[in-house]
Length: 105
Image (cartoon, rainbow, N blue to C red; front, side, top):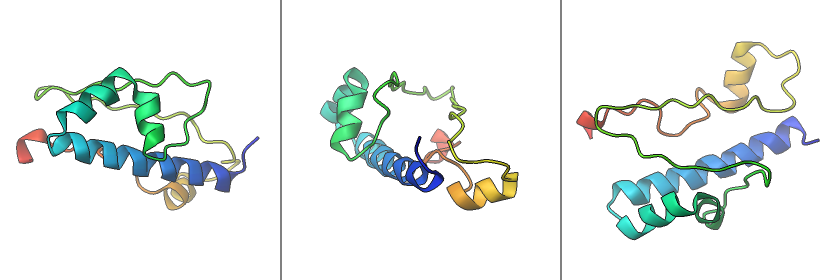
């Protein structure tokens, strides 16, 4: 079982990979976008993501009138932490592009 610190490092690697992937898509790399949607695991792992081998990975593009929120799975090692402790440990959000209004970009 992974420790809380191991899980935090894994989440940080995944966040960094996802941030790079989103940036590349937003900057118009259509070939990368197609690859990301077709084979998200390999594409994200090529950017340094550390994805659980048992997890099904999918990428879905939001439309201009749609916003998808994903509730991440509970990290291991939280124990009896308070909500404030979890925010301090993992940041304000485990996602890198939460609620970005597309009409403001």
